[in-house]
Amino acid sequence: MALVVASDLHGSATWTRRLLNACEVEKASQVVLLGDILYHGPRNPLPEGYDPPEVARLLNADAARIVAIRGNCDSEVDSMVLQFPLFDFASVTVDGHRFLCTHGHRFNDQQLPPMVAGDVLLFGHTHIYLAEDRDGLFVLNPGSVSLPKGGRTNTYMVYRNDVCSIKDFSGEVLATLTVV
Image (tube, rainbow, N blue to C red; front, side):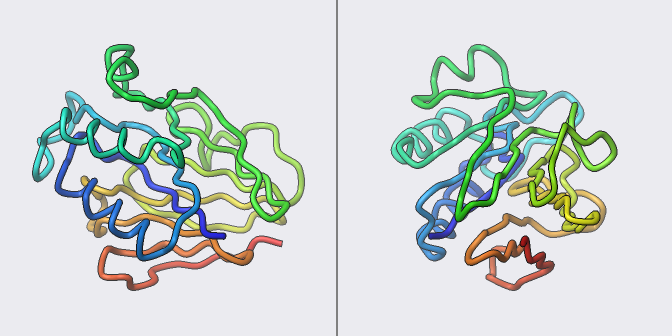
């Protein structure tokens, strides 16, 4: 079973299509979106292919396998056009691993939520990927699908068989973390 995790689509239909294609290539049974789905936000430039209604249409067609988190740029009106709920925080269990999912503007690598050994914190918001083992607490940020920062490239994460891999859209693995 593969889990694809992505963050910060910011209304880019171009990059949403690429993400959904990557989900097919990875054979993802579930997709976790860590927020900032439709709106680009006041501090971000318009991403390539900015088309929030098309992003909503694309994601709604795949709603059955999406778990989505509300980001700081996601509003009530966004949740009205999406056919899946936007949670403030969610817990997803895969292969006995508990993935704690948040956007990152409240809980992140500097401010951890309550966690126990073996938990995996998934957060976005910074647009910079990260994969760290902090003495059995795993902290991961898939980076940004559409607006990477810090000189990084567009990325997403895939979990399969105890391994979290952060990848670019050519399929190159940029970082890995084994969660046990």
